[in-house]
Amino acid sequence: MIDNRFNALAHWDNPEGHRYSVELEIISVEMNIGAESKNDAFPVIEILKTNIMDRKSDERIEGIVGNNFSSYVRDYDFSVLLPKHNKNRLEFSTPDNFGELHGNLFKCFLNSNAYKENFSKPPVICLSASSSKTYRRTENQHPVLGVEYEQNEFSSTDQYFKKMGLEVRFFMPPNSVAPLAFYFIGDLLADYTNLELIGTISTMETFQKIYRPEIYNANSAAGACYQPDLKHQDYSLTRIVYDREERSRLAVEQGKFADEHFIKPYKTLLEEWFANSVH
Image (cartoon, rainbow, N blue to C red; front, side, top):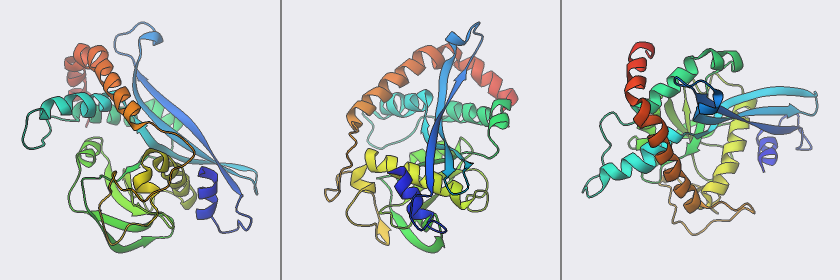
């Protein structure tokens, strides 16, 4: 699915439609705090790195790092802390300093020698648009990213990623049916090549067709004014099974694990460290 989508978007000098293939590399980030061995390291972040194989030139092209995003601390914030904070509340709200710890962890990762030695460009995270917000199509159009959409207000995810130092823009690529959210640093349209962007689009659109087929594998495309709907019935399923309920349970389990083994023991120490190191 990923390779087919990539070749459909990278159609120039690609008459047979199978010039490129995409390789995915899982990047796991761990953190040691006063531990004597790597066995005590805590899993902080997991992202993906795309690599593009060009069969015509026999070249391996580096893609974008980021793409999908997984974090035990984020699972704690959204699946443990946020529901607890909003229990019995009439209006949804976020706790004070919501996302600060996670944002500082992410910034420290980007500023680390480990990141700089392994990756030449800032990350791009590509996620689903929020089902609680409305998006309006603009006149702005990019040859690869497609038509840009703008939202009526920031979602809690947008605000959370802002604390990680990331901006957001929404684009619906050619022949897609719904806009994707792109979280980035710098200039999304100027800082990455078309092939780099296509690597991220083809990967994450495929993931979202599996994760949220009601939105990204719908049988009709988003209109000028669009609100994603997970209860939408007119969609097609892929042949890959994904259990959202199981993922939600796992998020709670990982969030509780993060609270017990990372946040409670080290929260004060981390806050003191970030106060001196994160700018």
